[in-house]
Length: 188
Image 1: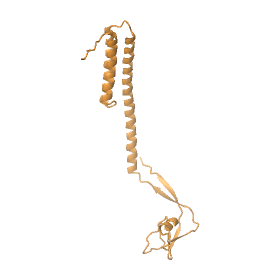
Image 2: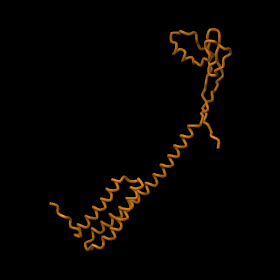
Image 3: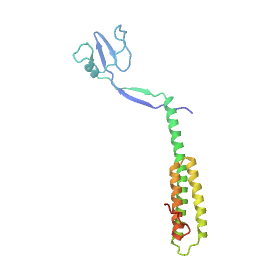
Image 4: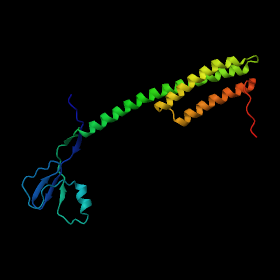
């Protein structure tokens, strides 16, 4: 597959510059005759006035109406395309990782939400039995597993995973205390 190199076209008005008796064309780099002192002159009229404000050199621009010429500059596309290719590859990889991480985080949130909903239902029951907590413990185990997998893959930080597991355990403990299935030890 051939690489297409981007080309830029710059308008260039050639100006005839005179130095003593010789004339030199700007933008083409061509000299009608070789000068021993000056090899090429590529000055524009405003550059010579800026560089030599006191007129210390006899270079001056002669304004003659010339046809508008265009200079074509083509960019060599060797190193630039490699960067563009590696940047696009990085973008593709980042998008893949973003989707994967989003799915993992969504799974963790869904499992946590299911545990919290079950615990809220269990807490609102007045005639709840201690055996009903078993179904919640299974949901908590699945949530722990999802959190641990997310931490292992790098989707969640290990402290974030520990915080979320702690939230689940604390909420379960409050339900157990509420129903009297767990009595916290009194610290002295």
